[in-house]
Structure formats: structure tokens, C-alpha cells
Amino acid sequence: MLNYEQQEKWSKIVPNWQSPINIDTLHTIEVNAQEKILSFDDEYRFINIVNKGNNLQYDGKGKAIIEGRTFDFQQLHFHFPAEHTIDGKSLPMELHFVHQNMIGQIAVVALYVELGEFSKELDSFFQDFPVNESEKDPFSATLSLNNLIASLGSGVYHYLGSLTTPPLVKNVEWWVIEKPITVSVEQLDKLKKRFNHGNAREIQPTNGRKIIHYVLR
Amino acid sequence: MLNYEQQEKWSKIVPNWQSPINIDTLHTIEVNAQEKILSFDDEYRFINIVNKGNNLQYDGKGKAIIEGRTFDFQQLHFHFPAEHTIDGKSLPMELHFVHQNMIGQIAVVALYVELGEFSKELDSFFQDFPVNESEKDPFSATLSLNNLIASLGSGVYHYLGSLTTPPLVKNVEWWVIEKPITVSVEQLDKLKKRFNHGNAREIQPTNGRKIIHYVLR
Image (cartoon, rainbow over all chains, first blue to last red; front, side, top):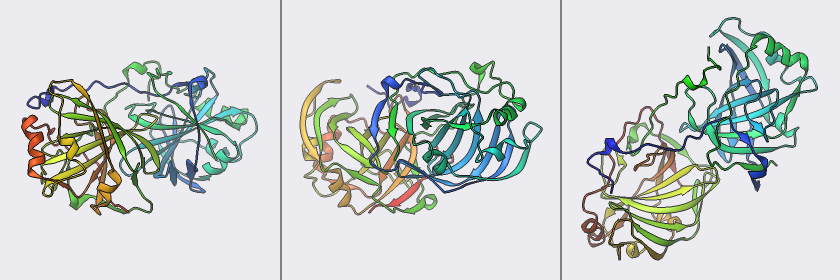
């Protein structure tokens, strides 16, 4: 029986559901979405770029409707190589679009990048970077996540995890877009030369989590 | 700069958002819901009742649509006095309808109970209890949460908190229905005589959380 006179002694041991994970496509749950699950403002507007040492953070504004709930877009950053793997396969890069809603829930839309055609949409993101760590510069650009994702005709993997950098906040909703966009070798090299150590967290154990695979409409 | 060679040393310190809390109605965020935020199967069907020592757990089945997402109803239990307070005011009892969705998110709908008219809907829940701790008995009943809430013409408070018993799992979505339902003195006494110690967790600090007040449709 729970002792309500000694609440400070109650156990707080809970499963540790961290990110990134490997997505094992043989064990995802297939769901045909009845309605549009992910939609975004036509344009996310970017206003600042911050040199985070081993990352670049592009601060911006915009609204997303995720499973019917409104989230504010906060910032975009990247990881290379990609953090999430699919059936053990690693891609060169992963973009994280971080969102938060009014009560504080966090939803990250992850977009894979592979080498291929030059990306016109992303090119301005590969230009001038702040030189020093913690330096924040004005950065003016727009990006349509709707268009980027729609052009892929892709599904999305959805599961509950964490941020992949400290403080590794848990209960983050992950929306990992299945198919990658492309950038050219020259575009990726601009980032790689500048941030040459790589910044992907190690794959974390799934610990019994369920991963849904939605076919996007 | 983050050290990706020593990921095991990364900080995991995050805000501790626990439940229950006091709801300070002067500082809630008023939102007029555009669509129906909470809807439930016409009937939740109960199948078992478990004596949890200082609580009763009524296991059941049913579906809820919460902000457009599907959750499975899992179980109902009670706390007296009520755990959440509104502007410091405590009510005699609070019912917790616990739900979970496919990826593991937890949503609890909390329904206040005050003393007043006899409750026909809840009466079968106040009858025979399993005598011994951990005893589980078959229990057959149905309950329409839709009807219970609709009859109140009530708003709902929404915030991010935790379970109120160990392991105090965080990132639980709370939906605290503003107005109470009633039970008779005799009905409440049946529970109180059997579970006479009370089982309300202490009020937890809000720690900067935002509480939304939705007007339900």
C-alpha cells in the first residue's frame, strides 16, 4: 500500500525513452492516416542564425498543425551524419525542425538529406555562418516545409523519444520523414568543412517503444 | 561546445513538472476551442475492479478522441480529497480516467465530485469492493463520459504534468473538467469508510507551466 505520509520516498523509476533510435521497418505499425497529419504554414520565416559550436541553429517563426494541434516552429538545426537510422542504414545528414505547443510539448520533424541534386530551397542556409561560438547573426530566409515534404510523396515514422542534445528532454514527439531530400556535394561540403567533427548522438535502445508508420496524404 | 566523444557525461537536468497542482484561474490562458477537443465513445465498458490498497482501480475499455488523436481508455480510479485545487479550493473527490495512445502518451481526464444529488451513473461503482489488497474481481458496468461532461456545460483546464502515484511518470496531459458532478453523502461514505486514510498527493509547484482554459463545445 502506498504510504501517503511519506510521499518523498515514492519511487520515480520510469522507462528511459531516448533518441535517436534505429527504425526497424519490419516492426513498425502501419497506419493509413484518415486526415492530414502534418501541415505547416506556407512559409517558415527565419530571423537569426546562431553558431552553437558543433551546430548551427536557425531561429524562425511559423505554425504547424500536427495531428490537429497547433505548434509554434522555433528553430532548425542539422546533424551529420543523420542521427536516426532506418534498418541500420545511415544517411549523410538530418535536419531537425523543432516545434513546441502552448503547454510545452515538443514535436520535432526530421528530414533526411542525401547527396544528389543541388537544393535551391536550402542553398541560402549554406552560405555565411557566424564565425565564433555563441555568435548570433541576423539571417533572413523562408522555407516551405509543406512543399519540401509534399515533393517527396513520403511516409513518416512517428514515435516518442527525447531531444538528442543536453538536457535530453524526454517525451518529444518525433516525426521522421521517410524519404530524403537532396543537396549537392558542394553544398554539404560547406557545412562539413566548417563543422568537421560530426554531431550525431549514438543510437539509443528502443526499450519496447512502438513506432508508427503513417502514409502521408 | 558539446563533446561528442563523451556523450555519457551530458547533462540531463530538466524542469520537474509534477501533478497535482493548484489551478490559479487568474493566470490561465483562455482559448475558445474551434473544434470539439474532447469526445469519448458513447460508453466506456468496465470489466474488472482491483483493490489497490488505498485506491480502487476500475479497468475498462473505450476510445477517446483528444485534440484529434485517438487514445485508449485504460482505467478509472479516485482520490479523496480531490488532488487538483482551483484557486486553493479543495473538493471532496476527484475521478481520474486514464488514457494512453499508440506511441505511449498518457492523457488523464479528471472529473471533480462534490456532495449533492445521488448519482445514478456512478452508483454501481460504489457497491461491492474486493476485500483484500491486490484482489481483482470481475466488474461489469458502463459509463458515458460524454454525457457526464456534457451535462455540466463546463470548461476544462489543460496542462502538462505527471501521474500522481509512483512512478510519477511525467509528460502526462491533464484535462481537468472545471465543474463537478455530484454524489450523495451516502455514496461518498461507502468509499470513505472502506478507504479511510485519504489518498491525495500533495500540491506540486507549477514551475512556470502554462495552464490553458478551454471552453468546451
